[in-house]
Amino acid sequence: MNKPIYLDYNATTPISPEVATVMRPYLEEYFGNPSSSHIYGTETKKAVELARKQIAELLNCFPDEITFTSGGSESNNFAIKGTAYQNRDRGNHIITSTVEHPAVTEVCQFLEKEGFKVTYLPVDEFGRVDPVDVEKAITPATILITVMHANNEVGTIQPVEEIGVIAKKHNIIFHSDAAQSVGKIETDVQKMGVDLLSVAGHKFYAPKGIGALYIKRGVKLQKLIHGADHEQNLRAGTENVLEIAGLGKAAEIAKRYLQKNTAHMKMLRDQLYDNLKKELPDLKLNGHPEFRLPNTFCRGCLPLRKY
Image (cartoon, rainbow, N blue to C red; front, side, top):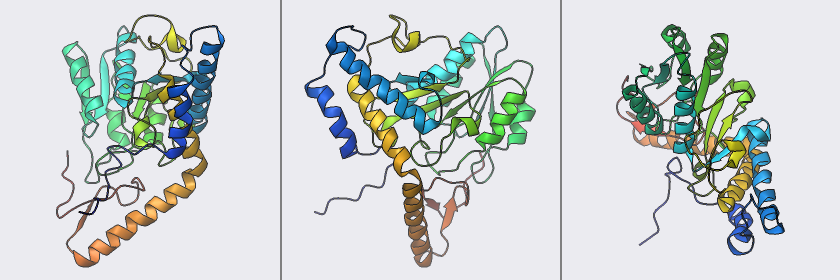
């Protein structure tokens, strides 16, 4: 039998050969604890800090604004719970959308049991949140807005820059789950206006089990994992050097080829749609026709239902 063609890249990607090559020495040779002061520790510490710099360059932020996590789900949990608990004295209201990944919606539902109130905003027929609805939902008790950058199923890109302006205007912390967008489209945290942004390594050719959270300078989060003062005293636990090195390299590659890869993916996506449309005239595109990930094509015979 012929090997099946893999098209599920929004679920996970293979590890890039360049990434695997960078990781190998930390699997076979450099095993020291990055917190150790001897040569074995300083060698691995260099790898961690290099990766932090590489991710910061991709996101256009300071290296000390990057905290390593176990992946997108942990980053989302840290961003949302950390903000909620840290700011409980200011308010208890969170705004999100109805099309978020379970790593966001499940967290919000958990916080509702903890006494927080959550507004779940609807989306239009393209799966897009209206910034006007975001502003209307704000109350004096609102402490966090969390809206994904791009949807994993239909690829719709949310108006995060407009939401960022609204959040700043009302002095509300803004988090975006960018698991699907990092490495595929520009994720410049300065332009986006986010305070927190989640990264998942295995969505852009790094290994599974590694991610990062961008935390803007000045934003305070309550820790979820307590212990020693790893990761600037934000996340206890000896760093996963092997995978951190891989994540950093993946970020470097993504930045290097971003424009080229974006254009190539969009060309293939549109070519697939055009060819299918010729054979299936009733084919309906799900997702936004313009504001959509370049690698994502979701089709059906019925329009995207309104959530």
